[in-house]
Image (tube, rainbow, N blue to C red; front, top):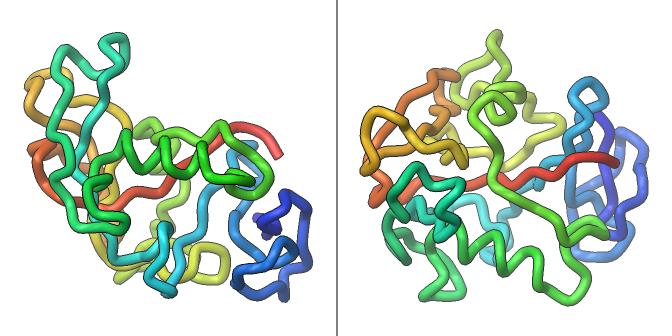
Length: 177
């Protein structure tokens, strides 16, 4: 993994989280070529405790059902679904880590950051700090039921599916450095 600054530049492994342009805000996976958002503890937009319902208005991506709007608990209020969160990140003044092409991860992508040797949380805390041992939505609908979507339980690394109305956490991804 490589730490990435909020401006989009590689950082040393000793870099700390923060709010400035040169502070660590994303993690690049050197194996998969995916860049991941890093959660914060500051109560802001990327706050670790915020939850979102699963929602996608894209008929080609939602498995035939849009999901639930604003079904989580987040700030700013009224934006607590996966689609609105993605839009907020991509329309912010500078985007995130110098990019404005963030999206929900496919199930296999989200599974790729599970640390199979860890639990509570089952993720590398050195590169994905502030990750609650909790459920994180994948952008993948559950084909057998339009009311459900896939998620990863970062307590244990299990892959499960559940109702799109539930308030789970989100970690956005993008391709490339």
